[in-house]
Image 1 (cartoon, rainbow, N blue to C red):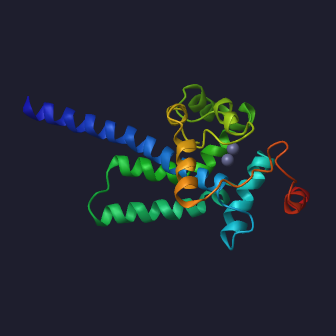
Image 2 (image 1 turned 90 degrees about the horizontal axis):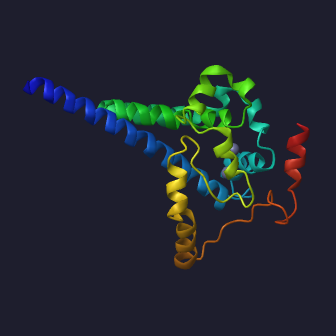
Image 3 (image 1 turned 180 degrees about the horizontal axis):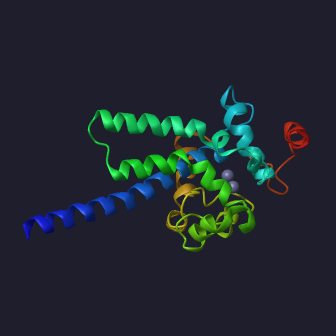
Length: 207
Ligand SMILES: [Zn+2]
Ligand SMILES: [Zn+2]
Protein backbone atom coordinates (compact mmCIF):
# COMPACT_ATOMS: atom_id res chain seq x y z
CA UNK A 1 0.00 0.00 0.00
CA UNK A 2 2.76 2.40 1.01
CA UNK A 3 4.74 1.46 -2.08
CA UNK A 4 1.72 2.06 -4.33
CA UNK A 5 1.11 5.40 -2.68
CA UNK A 6 4.72 6.53 -3.06
CA UNK A 7 4.73 5.43 -6.75
CA UNK A 8 1.54 7.43 -7.35
CA UNK A 9 3.10 10.40 -5.57
CA UNK A 10 6.25 10.18 -7.73
CA UNK A 11 4.11 10.01 -10.88
CA UNK A 12 2.08 13.05 -9.77
CA UNK A 13 5.32 14.93 -9.05
CA UNK A 14 6.71 14.07 -12.49
CA UNK A 15 3.50 15.15 -14.24
CA UNK A 16 3.31 18.40 -12.28
CA UNK A 17 7.01 19.01 -12.93
CA UNK A 18 6.52 18.40 -16.65
CA UNK A 19 3.59 20.86 -16.78
CA UNK A 20 5.76 23.47 -15.03
CA UNK A 21 8.58 22.67 -17.49
CA UNK A 22 6.23 23.39 -20.43
CA UNK A 23 5.29 26.77 -18.95
CA UNK A 24 8.94 27.54 -18.07
CA UNK A 25 10.06 26.77 -21.64
CA UNK A 26 7.25 28.94 -23.05
CA UNK A 27 8.21 31.78 -20.71
CA UNK A 28 11.97 31.65 -21.42
CA UNK A 29 11.35 31.61 -25.17
CA UNK A 30 8.90 34.51 -24.70
CA UNK A 31 11.49 36.54 -22.78
CA UNK A 32 14.08 36.16 -25.56
CA UNK A 33 11.43 37.00 -28.19
CA UNK A 34 10.49 40.13 -26.20
CA UNK A 35 14.15 41.25 -25.93
CA UNK A 36 14.57 40.79 -29.69
CA UNK A 37 11.35 42.63 -30.54
CA UNK A 38 11.68 45.44 -28.04
CA UNK A 39 15.41 46.17 -27.82
CA UNK A 40 17.61 44.36 -30.35
CA UNK A 41 18.42 46.68 -33.28
CA UNK A 42 19.46 45.70 -36.78
CA UNK A 43 22.62 47.87 -36.53
CA UNK A 44 23.80 46.13 -33.35
CA UNK A 45 27.27 44.52 -33.84
CA UNK A 46 27.15 40.76 -34.61
CA UNK A 47 23.73 40.12 -33.01
CA UNK A 48 22.12 42.66 -35.36
CA UNK A 49 22.83 40.55 -38.42
CA UNK A 50 22.51 37.16 -36.70
CA UNK A 51 19.34 37.66 -34.66
CA UNK A 52 17.76 41.12 -35.06
CA UNK A 53 17.46 41.10 -38.85
CA UNK A 54 15.73 37.70 -39.19
CA UNK A 55 13.44 38.75 -36.33
CA UNK A 56 12.57 42.13 -37.91
CA UNK A 57 12.06 40.46 -41.29
CA UNK A 58 9.62 38.06 -39.60
CA UNK A 59 7.43 41.00 -38.58
CA UNK A 60 7.44 42.33 -42.15
CA UNK A 61 7.02 38.99 -43.90
CA UNK A 62 5.77 36.42 -41.37
CA UNK A 63 5.93 33.45 -43.77
CA UNK A 64 9.43 34.20 -45.08
CA UNK A 65 11.10 31.91 -42.50
CA UNK A 66 9.02 28.92 -43.61
CA UNK A 67 11.57 28.38 -46.37
CA UNK A 68 14.15 27.40 -43.70
CA UNK A 69 14.46 23.67 -42.91
CA UNK A 70 13.86 22.32 -39.39
CA UNK A 71 17.63 21.99 -38.88
CA UNK A 72 18.37 25.51 -40.16
CA UNK A 73 15.68 26.91 -37.83
CA UNK A 74 16.71 25.05 -34.68
CA UNK A 75 20.40 23.97 -34.74
CA UNK A 76 21.51 26.76 -32.40
CA UNK A 77 18.74 26.03 -29.89
CA UNK A 78 19.52 22.30 -30.09
CA UNK A 79 23.08 23.15 -28.95
CA UNK A 80 21.72 25.10 -25.96
CA UNK A 81 19.35 22.23 -25.09
CA UNK A 82 22.10 19.62 -25.48
CA UNK A 83 24.33 21.62 -23.09
CA UNK A 84 21.45 21.78 -20.59
CA UNK A 85 20.79 18.02 -20.81
CA UNK A 86 24.52 17.26 -20.47
CA UNK A 87 24.79 19.51 -17.41
CA UNK A 88 21.70 17.91 -15.81
CA UNK A 89 23.10 14.43 -16.53
CA UNK A 90 26.49 15.36 -15.03
CA UNK A 91 24.75 16.64 -11.89
CA UNK A 92 22.55 13.52 -11.74
CA UNK A 93 19.46 15.71 -12.23
CA UNK A 94 18.31 14.45 -15.63
CA UNK A 95 14.55 14.07 -15.10
CA UNK A 96 11.52 14.00 -17.41
CA UNK A 97 10.70 17.72 -16.74
CA UNK A 98 14.28 18.68 -17.70
CA UNK A 99 13.92 16.68 -20.95
CA UNK A 100 10.51 18.27 -21.69
CA UNK A 101 12.01 21.73 -21.15
CA UNK A 102 15.01 20.95 -23.37
CA UNK A 103 12.90 19.51 -26.22
CA UNK A 104 10.50 22.47 -26.25
CA UNK A 105 13.20 25.16 -26.06
CA UNK A 106 15.29 23.31 -28.66
CA UNK A 107 12.38 23.21 -31.12
CA UNK A 108 10.69 26.52 -30.28
CA UNK A 109 11.43 28.01 -33.72
CA UNK A 110 9.88 25.01 -35.47
CA UNK A 111 6.79 25.17 -33.22
CA UNK A 112 6.60 28.88 -34.11
CA UNK A 113 6.78 28.00 -37.83
CA UNK A 114 3.86 25.58 -37.47
CA UNK A 115 1.75 28.53 -36.23
CA UNK A 116 2.41 30.28 -39.57
CA UNK A 117 1.57 27.33 -41.79
CA UNK A 118 -1.82 26.50 -43.25
CA UNK A 119 -3.64 23.35 -42.09
CA UNK A 120 -2.76 21.73 -45.39
CA UNK A 121 0.93 22.51 -44.94
CA UNK A 122 0.95 21.21 -41.35
CA UNK A 123 -0.84 17.90 -41.87
CA UNK A 124 -3.10 15.97 -39.46
CA UNK A 125 -0.74 15.45 -36.49
CA UNK A 126 0.27 19.12 -36.13
CA UNK A 127 -3.33 20.19 -36.77
CA UNK A 128 -4.43 17.90 -33.92
CA UNK A 129 -1.87 19.48 -31.55
CA UNK A 130 -3.27 22.91 -32.54
CA UNK A 131 -6.92 21.80 -32.27
CA UNK A 132 -6.34 20.34 -28.80
CA UNK A 133 -4.57 23.58 -27.76
CA UNK A 134 -1.47 21.57 -26.80
CA UNK A 135 0.67 23.80 -29.03
CA UNK A 136 0.00 27.40 -30.01
CA UNK A 137 -2.07 27.62 -33.19
CA UNK A 138 -2.22 30.24 -35.98
CA UNK A 139 -5.23 32.11 -34.62
CA UNK A 140 -3.60 32.74 -31.23
CA UNK A 141 -0.20 33.62 -32.72
CA UNK A 142 -1.82 36.08 -35.15
CA UNK A 143 -2.45 38.36 -32.15
CA UNK A 144 1.32 38.89 -31.83
CA UNK A 145 1.49 39.86 -35.51
CA UNK A 146 -1.27 42.47 -35.16
CA UNK A 147 -0.08 46.12 -34.80
CA UNK A 148 1.52 47.29 -32.53
CA UNK A 149 3.04 43.79 -32.23
CA UNK A 150 3.90 44.28 -28.58
CA UNK A 151 1.96 41.45 -26.89
CA UNK A 152 1.80 37.62 -26.87
CA UNK A 153 5.55 36.95 -27.09
CA UNK A 154 5.31 33.31 -25.92
CA UNK A 155 5.07 31.00 -28.96
CA UNK A 156 4.84 27.45 -27.56
CA UNK A 157 1.46 27.28 -25.79
CA UNK A 158 -1.72 29.34 -25.60
CA UNK A 159 -1.79 29.18 -21.79
CA UNK A 160 0.76 31.76 -20.69
CA UNK A 161 0.11 34.77 -22.95
CA UNK A 162 -3.38 35.60 -21.58
CA UNK A 163 -2.05 35.52 -18.00
CA UNK A 164 0.97 37.72 -18.81
CA UNK A 165 -1.21 40.21 -20.72
CA UNK A 166 -3.71 40.37 -17.86
CA UNK A 167 -0.81 41.18 -15.53
CA UNK A 168 0.50 43.71 -18.11
CA UNK A 169 3.80 41.91 -17.52
CA UNK A 170 5.74 43.14 -20.59
CA UNK A 171 4.41 46.69 -20.38
CA UNK A 172 5.38 46.95 -16.72
CA UNK A 173 8.81 45.44 -17.42
CA UNK A 174 9.43 47.98 -20.22
CA UNK A 175 8.20 50.80 -17.99
CA UNK A 176 10.59 49.67 -15.22
CA UNK A 177 13.55 49.51 -17.63
CA UNK A 178 12.72 52.98 -18.99
CA UNK A 179 12.41 54.57 -15.57
CA UNK A 180 15.38 52.79 -14.00
CA UNK A 181 17.92 52.67 -16.83
CA UNK A 182 16.44 55.01 -19.47
CA UNK A 183 16.21 52.10 -21.96
CA UNK A 184 13.43 52.62 -24.48
CA UNK A 185 11.73 50.19 -26.88
CA UNK A 186 12.96 50.42 -30.43
CA UNK A 187 10.50 51.53 -33.06
CA UNK A 188 8.99 48.61 -34.99
CA UNK A 189 8.80 49.98 -38.53
CA UNK A 190 6.74 46.98 -39.66
CA UNK A 191 3.81 48.71 -37.91
CA UNK A 192 1.83 51.16 -39.98
CA UNK A 193 3.06 54.76 -39.67
CA UNK A 194 6.10 53.75 -37.57
CA UNK A 195 8.78 54.68 -40.08
CA UNK A 196 10.36 53.52 -43.33
CA UNK A 197 11.10 49.96 -44.38
CA UNK A 198 14.88 49.32 -44.12
CA UNK A 199 16.57 48.76 -47.47
CA UNK A 200 17.94 45.34 -46.42
CA UNK A 201 14.33 44.09 -46.00
CA UNK A 202 13.61 44.91 -49.64
CA UNK A 203 16.85 43.13 -50.67
CA UNK A 204 16.01 40.08 -48.52
CA UNK A 205 12.63 39.82 -50.23
CA UNK A 206 14.34 39.64 -53.61
CA UNK A 207 16.66 36.85 -52.37
ZN1 LIG B 1 7.81 39.19 -32.65
ZN1 LIG C 1 5.44 34.67 -35.82
